[in-house]
Amino acid sequence: MDDSAARDARKALAYEEIRQLAARYALAVDSRDLDTLVGLFVDDVRVTREESGREALRASFEAQLKPLGVTILNIGTHVIDFADDDHATGHVYCKGEIQEGPRWIHQAILYRDKYERRDGRWYFVGRRHDLWYGANVGQNPAGLPPANWPERSYGSGTVPTLWTTWRDFAGTGSAESAAG
Image (cartoon, rainbow, N blue to C red; front, top):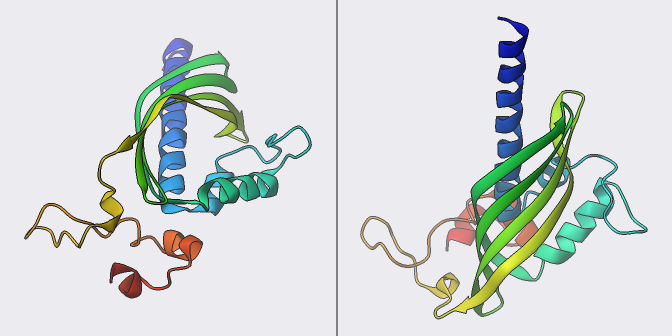
């Protein structure tokens, strides 16, 4: 393989690794897997003007997520621009569904990201969450009776309580007790 083809292959791989970073972020938030979530960021991530590091980031995520119920983050458009082989920025579109107390909210989100490759792996350096909108939806689906798929296609399902990390975060116990 010539130098140009090898460079193109490395760049294609970098694009995919960064896209996976954004997808893993969504899954980690929705499953409340805070260990995975903070592991997606550089170890010296800046959290506030006074705080940095993954432990501070974990505390920040925990505070942000604790008041929420179910979240469903659906990643869409993802544009990545490279500054060099180890630094990039990105714009990620996301449609979110968020349970906030009795309300069910739809959001259209734009994440503005900074990425860095360290020791051969891509990480978030920073992630800014901007909204196009957040709007209440008529019925909160979190309180519906079980769907019991395929018998009935409407109602509540088994996600997110099938994730141990979700149950641990929410303090709901085993999958059997969580499934009801």
